[in-house]
Length: 251
Image (cartoon, rainbow, N blue to C red; front, side, top):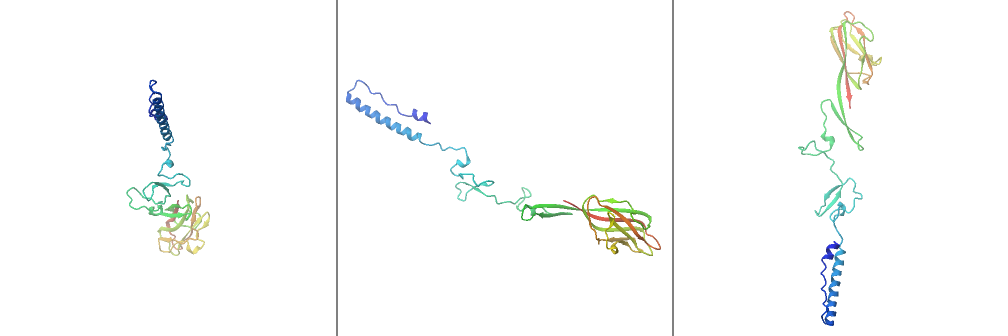
């Protein structure tokens, strides 16, 4: 800027030597006046500061500081005359770009078949827990005419945490004279503390089911075994399949 201003100063005319002294003095006074005016103009222009800026806060229509503005958004102000920092308030989501309605995540995720959704840490760092309830069946088969005894078939080791929900029995040959009764044990202890609730195929029938249990929870590593407590009196039931339904809970 200084070089440009200096070059723009008007050069002062040279006063000839061969003119009267009074005229020399007059012209010298004029040169002094012009020179002083040039100097004042130069000083004025030099005092003008450069208003260009390389920072957002240095602009004239933006906030002057980033203080207390962490994680805020930039928005046009209500008067449409400048920019300002605002706090983000829209925490809703859309399922896709075609979604017409934004909403909170909990209402955008829906449960499905054997899938349950639960909000945990309510009011704090909330999370959505997705739980899949998968039904598995433990099966024992004992061929031929039944005889009473403990551990009448192989142990079954449970691979996951779950809940016992139902047991069923099917026989090719129905017992007669008395009922055929089965007991199921978890780690050697009956799941029917109330023995009257044991899985019972009544005399003359070929099937039975039970949904009442005293012990329903199983965990990974539990060993399940089958006892035949009673087989019938006149005719023993034969070729029996016993099943235990367990709902495994996956999260």
